[in-house]
Amino acid sequence: MHTWIRLIAASAFALLGGVAHAQSWPDRPIRLISVFPPGGSVDQVARVLAQQLTKQLGQSVVVENIGGASGSIGTAAVAKAAPDGYTFGVVFDTHGTNPSLIPNLSYDTMTGLAHVTLIGTSPMALVASAKSKYANFADVNAEARSIKGVAIGSIGTGSLGHLAMIQAGKQDGWSWTHIPYRGGGPLMNDVVAGHTPLGIGTVFLVLPHVKAGTVRPIAVTGAKRHPSLPNTPTLAESGIRNFEALAYWGVIAPAKTPSAIIERMNSEVQKALKDPSVAERLEAQGMTITGQGPAAFSAFTAKEIERWRRIVKENGVTAGS
Image (cartoon, rainbow, N blue to C red; front, top):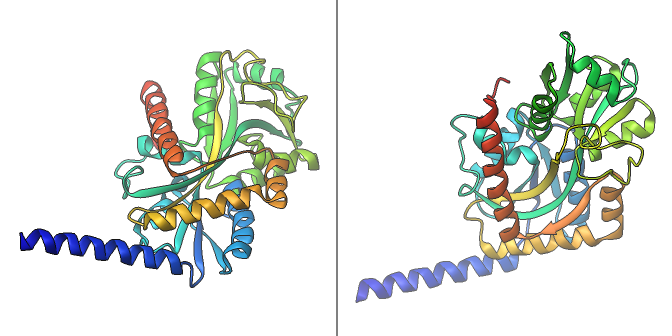
Protein backbone atom coordinates (compact mmCIF):
# COMPACT_ATOMS: atom_id res chain seq x y z
CA MET A 1 0.00 0.00 0.00
CA HIS A 2 2.75 2.41 0.96
CA THR A 3 4.50 1.66 -2.34
CA TRP A 4 1.40 2.65 -4.32
CA ILE A 5 1.05 5.84 -2.30
CA ARG A 6 4.67 6.74 -3.03
CA LEU A 7 4.18 6.04 -6.75
CA ILE A 8 1.04 8.17 -6.90
CA ALA A 9 2.78 10.97 -5.03
CA ALA A 10 5.78 10.79 -7.34
CA SER A 11 3.54 10.90 -10.41
CA ALA A 12 1.63 13.86 -9.05
CA PHE A 13 4.87 15.67 -8.24
CA ALA A 14 6.21 15.05 -11.77
CA LEU A 15 2.96 16.28 -13.30
CA LEU A 16 2.94 19.42 -11.19
CA GLY A 17 6.59 19.98 -12.00
CA GLY A 18 5.84 19.68 -15.72
CA VAL A 19 2.94 22.12 -15.45
CA ALA A 20 5.08 24.61 -13.52
CA HIS A 21 7.84 24.29 -16.11
CA ALA A 22 5.35 24.88 -18.91
CA GLN A 23 3.95 27.96 -17.17
CA SER A 24 7.40 29.55 -16.95
CA TRP A 25 8.32 28.52 -20.51
CA PRO A 26 10.11 30.05 -22.30
CA ASP A 27 12.61 31.80 -20.09
CA ARG A 28 15.59 31.58 -22.46
CA PRO A 29 16.27 31.38 -26.24
CA ILE A 30 14.79 28.50 -28.23
CA ARG A 31 16.71 26.55 -30.87
CA LEU A 32 14.78 25.83 -34.09
CA ILE A 33 16.68 23.30 -36.21
CA SER A 34 16.21 23.48 -39.98
CA VAL A 35 17.00 19.95 -41.14
CA PHE A 36 18.20 21.20 -44.55
CA PRO A 37 20.91 23.74 -45.46
CA PRO A 38 20.37 27.48 -45.99
CA GLY A 39 18.66 28.56 -49.20
CA GLY A 40 16.01 25.84 -49.41
CA SER A 41 12.35 25.91 -48.49
CA VAL A 42 12.83 24.35 -45.03
CA ASP A 43 15.31 27.06 -44.09
CA GLN A 44 12.98 29.77 -45.42
CA VAL A 45 9.97 28.42 -43.52
CA ALA A 46 12.02 28.10 -40.33
CA ARG A 47 13.22 31.71 -40.57
CA VAL A 48 9.76 33.12 -41.27
CA LEU A 49 8.41 31.23 -38.25
CA ALA A 50 11.36 32.10 -36.01
CA GLN A 51 10.96 35.81 -36.66
CA GLN A 52 7.27 35.77 -35.75
CA LEU A 53 7.64 33.39 -32.78
CA THR A 54 10.35 35.63 -31.33
CA LYS A 55 7.81 38.47 -31.28
CA GLN A 56 5.07 36.31 -29.79
CA LEU A 57 7.12 34.53 -27.13
CA GLY A 58 9.33 37.39 -26.03
CA GLN A 59 12.39 35.13 -26.37
CA SER A 60 14.77 34.69 -29.29
CA VAL A 61 13.99 31.76 -31.56
CA VAL A 62 17.28 30.99 -33.29
CA VAL A 63 17.44 28.95 -36.50
CA GLU A 64 20.25 26.41 -36.70
CA ASN A 65 20.86 24.57 -39.98
CA ILE A 66 21.84 20.91 -39.59
CA GLY A 67 21.55 19.38 -43.06
CA GLY A 68 22.58 16.10 -44.62
CA ALA A 69 21.22 12.60 -45.28
CA SER A 70 17.85 13.86 -46.56
CA GLY A 71 17.11 15.71 -43.36
CA SER A 72 17.80 12.76 -41.06
CA ILE A 73 20.91 14.25 -39.44
CA GLY A 74 19.05 17.36 -38.30
CA THR A 75 16.06 15.28 -37.22
CA ALA A 76 18.37 13.05 -35.17
CA ALA A 77 19.72 16.18 -33.47
CA VAL A 78 16.17 17.08 -32.45
CA ALA A 79 15.50 13.54 -31.21
CA LYS A 80 18.68 13.55 -29.09
CA ALA A 81 18.12 17.00 -27.60
CA ALA A 82 16.93 17.48 -24.03
CA PRO A 83 13.10 17.35 -23.96
CA ASP A 84 12.88 20.65 -22.12
CA GLY A 85 11.04 22.75 -24.67
CA TYR A 86 14.12 24.59 -25.92
CA THR A 87 14.78 22.55 -29.07
CA PHE A 88 12.36 22.16 -31.96
CA GLY A 89 12.86 21.33 -35.63
CA VAL A 90 11.31 22.05 -39.02
CA VAL A 91 11.09 18.96 -41.24
CA PHE A 92 10.14 18.33 -44.85
CA ASP A 93 8.55 15.49 -46.82
CA THR A 94 11.65 13.30 -46.36
CA HIS A 95 10.41 12.94 -42.78
CA GLY A 96 8.01 10.32 -44.11
CA THR A 97 10.37 8.60 -46.55
CA ASN A 98 13.59 8.31 -44.53
CA PRO A 99 12.34 5.40 -42.37
CA SER A 100 12.06 3.26 -45.53
CA LEU A 101 15.28 4.38 -47.15
CA ILE A 102 17.92 4.93 -44.49
CA PRO A 103 19.05 1.78 -42.67
CA ASN A 104 19.51 2.01 -38.91
CA LEU A 105 18.11 5.49 -38.31
CA SER A 106 19.27 6.59 -34.87
CA TYR A 107 15.71 7.57 -33.93
CA ASP A 108 12.21 6.21 -34.38
CA THR A 109 10.16 8.73 -36.35
CA MET A 110 6.93 7.98 -34.51
CA THR A 111 8.13 7.27 -30.95
CA GLY A 112 11.40 9.22 -30.76
CA LEU A 113 9.83 12.54 -31.71
CA ALA A 114 6.81 14.64 -30.80
CA HIS A 115 4.84 16.00 -33.75
CA VAL A 116 3.81 19.57 -33.01
CA THR A 117 2.28 21.25 -36.07
CA LEU A 118 1.78 20.39 -39.75
CA ILE A 119 2.47 23.81 -41.27
CA GLY A 120 1.39 23.36 -44.88
CA THR A 121 1.68 21.55 -48.20
CA SER A 122 2.75 22.27 -51.76
CA PRO A 123 2.92 20.38 -55.04
CA MET A 124 6.31 19.79 -56.58
CA ALA A 125 7.37 21.42 -59.84
CA LEU A 126 9.68 20.00 -62.48
CA VAL A 127 11.75 22.90 -63.81
CA ALA A 128 14.38 23.29 -66.51
CA SER A 129 17.36 25.60 -66.39
CA ALA A 130 16.84 28.61 -68.66
CA LYS A 131 20.26 27.64 -70.05
CA SER A 132 19.02 24.17 -71.06
CA LYS A 133 17.37 23.10 -74.30
CA TYR A 134 14.10 22.12 -72.61
CA ALA A 135 11.22 24.51 -73.26
CA ASN A 136 8.28 22.33 -72.23
CA PHE A 137 7.24 18.87 -71.08
CA ALA A 138 7.18 17.50 -74.64
CA ASP A 139 10.91 18.28 -74.96
CA VAL A 140 11.70 16.53 -71.69
CA ASN A 141 9.47 13.56 -72.46
CA ALA A 142 11.02 13.00 -75.89
CA GLU A 143 14.54 12.94 -74.52
CA ALA A 144 13.55 10.89 -71.48
CA ARG A 145 12.26 8.18 -73.81
CA SER A 146 15.49 8.12 -75.78
CA ILE A 147 18.53 5.98 -75.07
CA LYS A 148 20.39 9.05 -73.82
CA GLY A 149 17.70 9.92 -71.28
CA VAL A 150 17.67 12.94 -68.96
CA ALA A 151 19.29 13.99 -65.68
CA ILE A 152 17.04 15.32 -62.92
CA GLY A 153 18.22 16.80 -59.63
CA SER A 154 16.29 16.63 -56.35
CA ILE A 155 16.86 17.79 -52.79
CA GLY A 156 18.11 14.32 -51.87
CA THR A 157 17.73 10.58 -52.19
CA GLY A 158 14.31 9.51 -51.00
CA SER A 159 12.84 12.98 -51.18
CA LEU A 160 9.30 13.24 -52.46
CA GLY A 161 10.62 14.75 -55.69
CA HIS A 162 12.95 11.79 -56.20
CA LEU A 163 10.20 9.24 -55.56
CA ALA A 164 7.70 11.19 -57.68
CA MET A 165 10.09 11.06 -60.64
CA ILE A 166 10.62 7.34 -60.12
CA GLN A 167 6.86 6.80 -60.32
CA ALA A 168 6.43 9.10 -63.32
CA GLY A 169 9.43 7.65 -65.13
CA LYS A 170 8.31 4.10 -64.59
CA GLN A 171 4.83 4.85 -65.89
CA ASP A 172 6.02 6.78 -68.93
CA GLY A 173 9.02 4.64 -69.87
CA TRP A 174 11.70 7.19 -69.06
CA SER A 175 15.42 6.68 -69.05
CA TRP A 176 16.81 9.06 -66.46
CA THR A 177 19.58 9.69 -63.98
CA HIS A 178 18.93 10.99 -60.48
CA ILE A 179 21.26 13.68 -59.13
CA PRO A 180 20.78 14.02 -55.35
CA TYR A 181 21.65 17.26 -53.56
CA ARG A 182 21.92 18.13 -49.86
CA GLY A 183 18.97 20.50 -50.01
CA GLY A 184 16.97 22.95 -52.10
CA GLY A 185 19.58 25.72 -52.02
CA PRO A 186 22.37 23.66 -53.58
CA LEU A 187 19.92 22.10 -56.05
CA MET A 188 18.63 25.41 -57.36
CA ASN A 189 22.10 26.92 -57.50
CA ASP A 190 23.14 24.20 -59.95
CA VAL A 191 19.92 24.30 -62.00
CA VAL A 192 20.10 28.09 -62.32
CA ALA A 193 23.77 27.83 -63.33
CA GLY A 194 22.92 25.18 -65.92
CA HIS A 195 25.11 22.51 -64.32
CA THR A 196 22.01 20.35 -63.87
CA PRO A 197 19.48 20.74 -66.70
CA LEU A 198 16.38 19.70 -64.75
CA GLY A 199 15.35 19.87 -61.11
CA ILE A 200 12.32 18.95 -59.08
CA GLY A 201 11.39 20.87 -55.96
CA THR A 202 8.39 22.42 -54.29
CA VAL A 203 6.58 25.32 -55.91
CA PHE A 204 7.69 27.18 -52.76
CA LEU A 205 11.33 26.51 -53.68
CA VAL A 206 11.29 27.11 -57.43
CA LEU A 207 8.84 30.02 -57.75
CA PRO A 208 11.34 32.84 -57.01
CA HIS A 209 13.59 31.41 -59.73
CA VAL A 210 10.67 31.11 -62.16
CA LYS A 211 9.82 34.77 -61.51
CA ALA A 212 13.47 35.70 -62.03
CA GLY A 213 13.46 33.90 -65.39
CA THR A 214 16.37 31.63 -64.48
CA VAL A 215 14.32 28.43 -64.70
CA ARG A 216 11.33 27.34 -66.80
CA PRO A 217 8.42 25.48 -65.18
CA ILE A 218 7.74 22.21 -67.02
CA ALA A 219 5.03 20.45 -64.97
CA VAL A 220 3.59 20.28 -61.44
CA THR A 221 2.75 17.20 -59.38
CA GLY A 222 -0.58 18.39 -57.97
CA ALA A 223 -3.99 17.06 -59.00
CA LYS A 224 -4.67 20.44 -60.60
CA ARG A 225 -2.67 23.40 -61.82
CA HIS A 226 -1.17 25.63 -59.16
CA PRO A 227 -2.48 29.22 -58.92
CA SER A 228 1.09 30.54 -58.89
CA LEU A 229 1.88 28.67 -62.12
CA PRO A 230 -1.43 28.77 -64.02
CA ASN A 231 0.15 28.08 -67.43
CA THR A 232 2.12 25.05 -66.23
CA PRO A 233 0.40 21.68 -66.84
CA THR A 234 0.13 18.94 -64.27
CA LEU A 235 1.95 15.66 -64.86
CA ALA A 236 -1.52 14.11 -65.18
CA GLU A 237 -2.34 16.50 -68.03
CA SER A 238 1.00 15.63 -69.59
CA GLY A 239 0.23 11.92 -69.77
CA ILE A 240 1.26 10.65 -66.31
CA ARG A 241 -2.27 9.61 -65.38
CA ASN A 242 -3.79 9.68 -61.87
CA PHE A 243 -0.67 11.28 -60.44
CA GLU A 244 -0.42 13.50 -57.37
CA ALA A 245 2.36 14.10 -54.84
CA LEU A 246 2.43 16.89 -52.26
CA ALA A 247 5.37 18.07 -50.19
CA TYR A 248 4.86 19.32 -46.64
CA TRP A 249 6.55 21.13 -43.76
CA GLY A 250 6.09 20.50 -40.05
CA VAL A 251 7.40 21.35 -36.58
CA ILE A 252 8.75 18.55 -34.38
CA ALA A 253 10.24 18.26 -30.88
CA PRO A 254 12.07 15.61 -28.87
CA ALA A 255 9.87 12.85 -27.47
CA LYS A 256 8.96 13.35 -23.80
CA THR A 257 8.83 17.12 -24.18
CA PRO A 258 6.09 18.10 -21.69
CA SER A 259 2.69 17.94 -23.37
CA ALA A 260 1.80 21.38 -22.01
CA ILE A 261 4.80 22.85 -23.87
CA ILE A 262 3.93 20.94 -27.05
CA GLU A 263 0.39 22.33 -26.90
CA ARG A 264 1.69 25.83 -26.18
CA MET A 265 4.14 25.74 -29.09
CA ASN A 266 1.45 24.39 -31.41
CA SER A 267 -0.82 27.23 -30.31
CA GLU A 268 1.94 29.78 -30.96
CA VAL A 269 2.73 28.32 -34.39
CA GLN A 270 -0.98 28.34 -35.29
CA LYS A 271 -1.14 31.98 -34.19
CA ALA A 272 1.94 32.79 -36.28
CA LEU A 273 0.43 31.14 -39.36
CA LYS A 274 -2.64 33.35 -39.01
CA ASP A 275 -0.56 36.52 -38.90
CA PRO A 276 -1.12 38.26 -42.28
CA SER A 277 2.58 38.96 -42.85
CA VAL A 278 3.50 35.30 -42.26
CA ALA A 279 0.58 33.87 -44.24
CA GLU A 280 1.27 36.17 -47.19
CA ARG A 281 4.98 35.28 -47.29
CA LEU A 282 4.29 31.54 -47.23
CA GLU A 283 1.32 31.56 -49.59
CA ALA A 284 3.11 33.87 -52.04
CA GLN A 285 5.68 31.14 -52.55
CA GLY A 286 3.14 28.43 -53.26
CA MET A 287 2.36 26.92 -49.85
CA THR A 288 -1.15 25.96 -48.83
CA ILE A 289 -1.23 26.54 -45.06
CA THR A 290 -2.94 23.71 -43.16
CA GLY A 291 -1.97 24.38 -39.53
CA GLN A 292 -2.88 20.98 -38.08
CA GLY A 293 -1.99 20.13 -34.48
CA PRO A 294 -0.12 17.27 -32.78
CA ALA A 295 -2.70 14.47 -33.20
CA ALA A 296 -3.43 15.28 -36.85
CA PHE A 297 0.25 15.74 -37.73
CA SER A 298 1.19 12.46 -36.05
CA ALA A 299 -1.55 10.57 -37.92
CA PHE A 300 -0.52 12.25 -41.19
CA THR A 301 3.11 11.21 -40.67
CA ALA A 302 2.15 7.59 -39.97
CA LYS A 303 0.19 7.47 -43.24
CA GLU A 304 3.05 9.05 -45.21
CA ILE A 305 5.53 6.51 -43.83
CA GLU A 306 3.29 3.63 -44.89
CA ARG A 307 2.53 5.14 -48.31
CA TRP A 308 6.16 5.68 -49.26
CA ARG A 309 7.29 2.39 -47.74
CA ARG A 310 5.14 0.65 -50.38
CA ILE A 311 6.52 2.82 -53.20
CA VAL A 312 10.12 2.23 -52.08
CA LYS A 313 9.59 -1.52 -51.85
CA GLU A 314 7.72 -1.85 -55.14
CA ASN A 315 10.38 0.10 -57.05
CA GLY A 316 13.45 -1.29 -55.29
CA VAL A 317 14.61 2.19 -54.22
CA THR A 318 17.71 2.30 -52.04
CA ALA A 319 19.60 5.11 -50.33
CA GLY A 320 22.06 5.11 -53.21
CA SER A 321 19.45 5.37 -55.99
